Image (cartoon, rainbow, N blue to C red; front, side, top):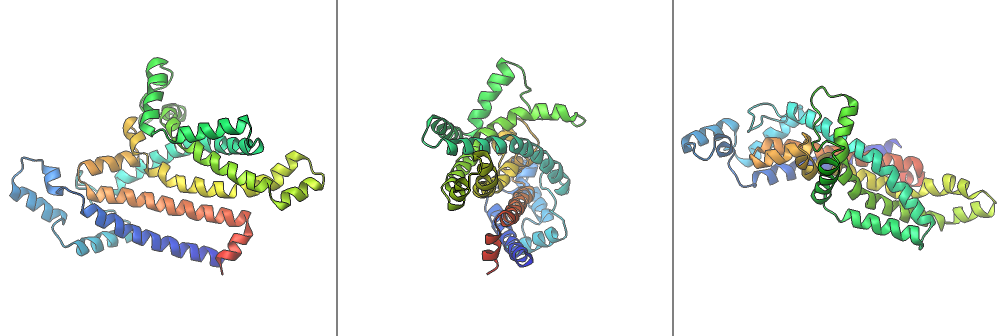
Length: 317
């Protein structure tokens, strides 16, 4: 297990290094001048050039990358062009807010997706299977901004049972925060339900047709026991991988949802940084998403090896 973890950690470090290269150099080719974005379109060129020099934006590309990477290794994300302040105090609360929304969406969609996929597999080819499969596929194809507007109109404007904004305030109670986050979570649940249900269905069908399931049935074990002890444990392996890959999306890919609901999360912060050509903030936000993604993938790998030791044995060869 130690060799397996060391190998995965090595891949994780290499992935983050390559990601830092991609993020930094991609951010530098985005059109726009940081000095001009901060001072406005009517500022004198001399003032813009002076600000670019003070920000280090006129230094060679490699020099800027090494300076940025060195700061990251010491926990320094740099100074925001837009706010003229350290980036870290903006990243931390935004990340916490995105995690709150992601956790709520996960708590709702993971049980629903798994239960829906298992039911569809148990009734393969019948009405329940077709309804769940078609519903999941249809919901996955609807963009978040469309489903978000629909739920706002229905539950926020027409019925007036839920607030249309996701921000509950600085000192809001846990219940108030939960109430404000329900509407933003619904579009995420609708999109992810189809993916999770589809993988749970495929894994369950494969487990039901396996030799160990047939052996358990021939031994005379009750159907519920066979499903609980033999089918679910193996059928959920691919589902865990899908859930892990969606974690990065939920943490940082919520730009549309967070902007639509005026939620101060990481996706909204990245969107505003891109608007104002705040490359330091933009690069830090995207890098944090990458870190969350690789950590979630590492956790998923560990869970998979605990549930299926054959993966651990194969991964160390």
